[in-house]
Image (cartoon, rainbow, N blue to C red; front, side, top):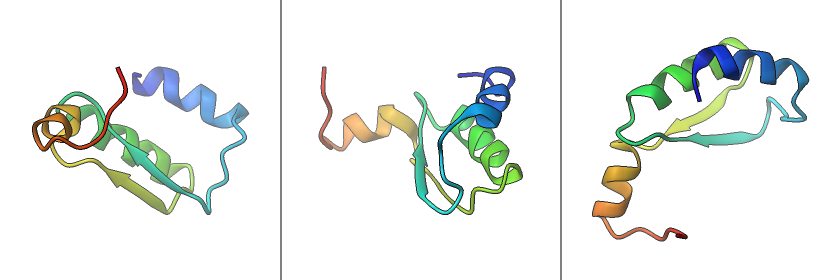
Length: 65
């Protein structure tokens, strides 16, 4: 999801800024931008999956088709 779509959603979301959030994308680059946006909106516990879904799947971590 692009930053332009993420920002308007944050104003209307039920997400709690104290909760932990994990963000990811295919390779990790867009997730880093999303994490930055979330932090700008007050989220303090934001984790980016290093290497994105590509790395996640390469490491045979669980996924659902």
